[in-house]
Length: 113
Length: 114
Image (tube, rainbow over all chains, first blue to last red):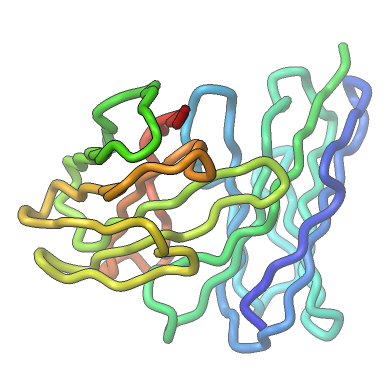
C-alpha cells in the first residue's frame, strides 16, 4: 500500500519532443506528490509537486497531470532539451507520514540533440 | 543557499569493517534521513530522525544504525560492512514547518564493499 510504481525505467526522446513519465499509487491517503530530478553526481532536487485537489500543475516546460480516480500522476516535459537528461523520481507522502517520502524506482531520461 | 554535505563522495571498505557515513546540514532542519539508491529500486529509506537523539527505522534498517547527537549532524553506521551494502547513500533534511515536505539532498556517498 505504500508503494509508488513508476514507468518507464528509461526513456529516449528527441530534442524538442515531449517526455512523459508515469506513476501509480495505491494508498488514497497520500496527499502530496512531488517529482525530483537528479543529475549525475548530484543528489535529487525537488522539481515540481502537486496536491490532489488540483488536476494539473505547470511550471515552465514541466507539467504534472493528476488523476485522482485512477490513482495515477504523470510528469510531462515539453520541448525536451539535452539539459533535461537526468533521472526523475516520483514520490508520495501524507500528513500522518510526517516528512517521509515514498519514492518510485526512477526513470533515466536521455534527450538526444 | 541551503546545503547538505556528506563526508565522502567515494568510499571503499572491506567486508566486516565498521563504516561511518557523516551528513551535515546548515538549514537548522529538524528532520534528517538516510537513503540508499540502487538502480531499478529508487530511493529506499534506511533511517530517519525527527529530533536530536531521536531515530526511527525506515524500510530497510537491517545492518545499519544511526546517531544524531547534534541537530545539524546525522551519521549512518554500518556495523559490519557486507558486499550487499555496496550502494549510493544519500542524506537529506527537511523541516516540518515547510508545508511542501520538501527534502534537501546531499550529493551522495558511493560506497563499495569488497
